[in-house]
Length: 132
Image (cartoon, rainbow, N blue to C red; front, top):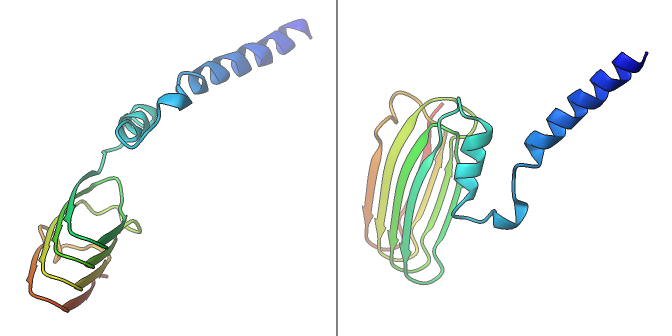
C-alpha cells in the first residue's frame, strides 16, 4: 500500500513541476507565442504582422495555428474581421487597406483562398468573403 501512495505522489509531483515552469509574471504580448509554442512543440505557430496607422482602426483575428497573415491599415476607421480558426488549413494572407471607413470581413479558408492578397484603396468600401 505504501508503494502505491508513493507512486501517486511522485506522479503528482512531476505533473506539478511542469506547470510550475511558467513564470506567469513574465507573460505579455511579446512572450505569449513563445510560451505557447514551448507547451506544444509539435504544433506550428501562427505569424501575424499588423500595422495600423490612423485613428479608430480595428483588426479582430480568430486564426488557427497555421496562419501567416500580414495586415496593413492606413487611414481612419478601417475594420478587419478575419476568422479561419475552424479549419486546420494552412493560410498565407496579406491584406492592405488605404483609405477611410473600409470594412473587410473574411470567414473560412480553403484552397481557393490560399495565398490571398487583398488591396483596398479608397473610402467607404466593404468586402465580404466566405470560404467554405
